[in-house]
Image (cartoon, rainbow, N blue to C red; front, side, top):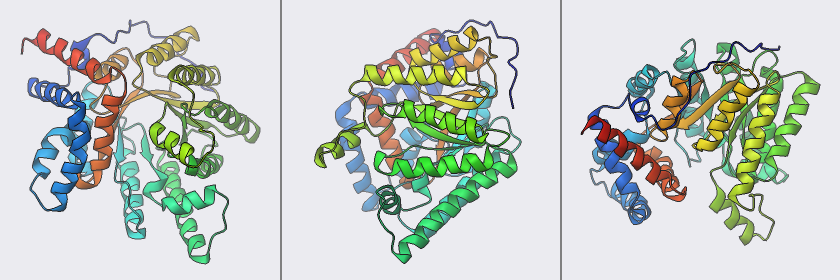
Length: 398
């Protein structure tokens, strides 16, 4: 099961090279990105945008073309897999892979859950045998009721109807993972809110036990802004050792902090979120070290827009004399963000893949609004994007 490291690449890594970062962007694309981030930088527009846009869709105003040509076009690949093809090829031209992410969320209908399962399976089938799509992904709440997962997490008894709904969730997850196994395509299970995450963790670990005997096919996601997740990663590694399977791990900082802390305060229980960003950064970087030190048993994805963590992982691979393109190590960022990380890492020989969301414009709006809000919430993120784009515009004299 051990994978021997190859010779270490020696190409220097810099996240300041905008020529490499934006080589895949035309002058028109670069100008559009510049004005989009200028708008995102105006916090009040990000706050009033969602209710205005939702209202416009609700009363039938023809705003879809505007949304699709601006924020949707920047952060999404298209409405269908076929529409994502130009993005897949464009990323591939810069040696960056694609993770097709069907981003319809917030639904609560069995027919929609079945359709979402089928869309996820379609992404796995599209990825088969294509190095341009090295990983796939899904959210369990995309294929099952949040309420059922919440009840399972709380250890409450199901009615007969709820038991049937739970079985359907399990069956959909298993069908997705089995398809990934049969087609030899890794699939990541996204993390969600803490009050359903224990159930998702158990599902993912059971899938690993079944499908990760010879290769890391199923990956679970560890949100390191939770103070208990470094311990979870180590416990799952121990289970993998004892039960002889490979642990697939996607490491992220986290996506639900405000919601988590608000719920903990409302329900008067101790929050699982770290006390501060320093603690989150510490655990994230410790998780990177742990994975690198146990690469014979762990395959992992470093999902981050944090330059320091990306540099740390690059340095760790060199320090341990591990090939930049080792099959157990991937870097990952979101489409439309941190191209200076993605394309400079890929240029230095590392495995890199971008999340490329797709789905009907109206259904993907919640995802798009989160992206815009995250850019304003992460200290310096929008300013960093703007400064890099401005630097490249100046270099091109446009």
